[in-house]
Image 1 (cartoon, rainbow, N blue to C red):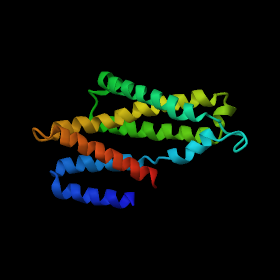
Image 2 (cartoon, rainbow, N blue to C red):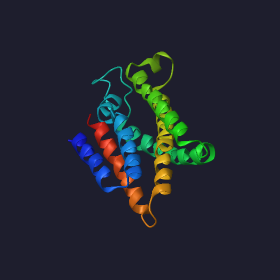
Image 3 (spheres, rainbow, N blue to C red):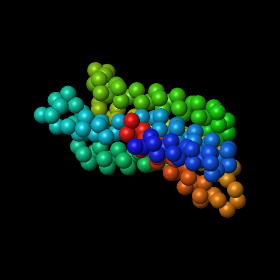
Amino acid sequence: GAICVATVMLIAFSLVLKPIIAKVNAFFLVQTAASLSIGGGSFYFYTDSPEQYPEGPHFSQEFYTSVLGVISALCALAGVWTYQHYASDWTYRRLLLTTNVLASLFSLSDVILFTRLNVKWGLPDHGFVLGSSVLSSVIGQWMWMPGVVILSQLCPHGMEATMYALLAGCHNLGMAVSSNL
């Protein structure tokens, strides 16, 4: 279902938007959709009780939803700040290539946690997940900012809010596709 909606949206972009704006939105929709999300299934891995999964991390639901959520939101702000101070003069190509490679590498942290290698290496589950969450939030902001900057430079006068809403909608649709693959 979500892939069909994304396909229809990509076609609609090419029909109703300027070609350069359509291409930017299409890129960011596909980029977000390609970052597969396993959040729904991993929730149970993280929060199962010792009776349900003895080797699991056994996080409380409060820690998994509240603590990680708040820390991720704060680190997203740190991601915007670090982007502004360290990466705002990078080329778009360098920034997008670097962030996509880093996001791919950091997604391997899930494999490390699911195979319990972190425990074998002496890294506690809470610290490992917090570190992974922090880095993912920062990298996520670094992936988001180029789209905002590019569209702000391309958008017609008076259409700034519409362009931002279009990019945010593409991002949300990409997240829906990635979580339903």
